[in-house]
Amino acid sequence: MERLKWIRQALGKTQKEMANLLGVSLRAYQMYEEGKTNIPLPKLRILASQYKVNINWLLTGEGEPFLTPSAESVKKKTPQVV
Image 1: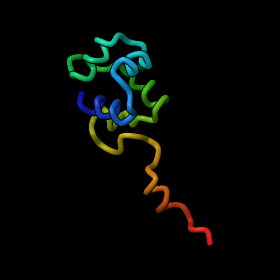
Image 2: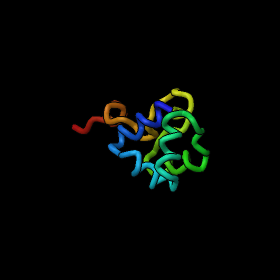
Image 3: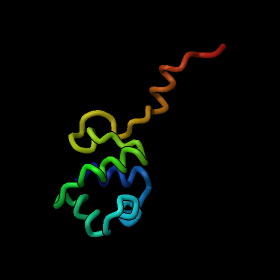
Image 4: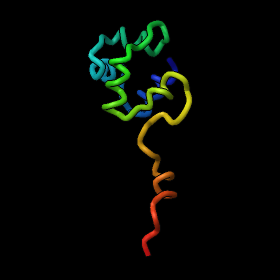
């Protein structure tokens, strides 16, 4: 799954670090990234809670990769203090 790989790289993590976070073997994690095995929902929940990953984006590509707002969107919504 290319988006899972993108998330890992955006977080600056190795495959081994992600496997440890999810509580799976390195090979199991590699199979998730390769799209040979679907990542189970409980593992997706770990990514969402630990790193604020948008599960909808991860599965469908729709929306933003992370649930936290970008700095640019925060600037637009933050009132200017004079």
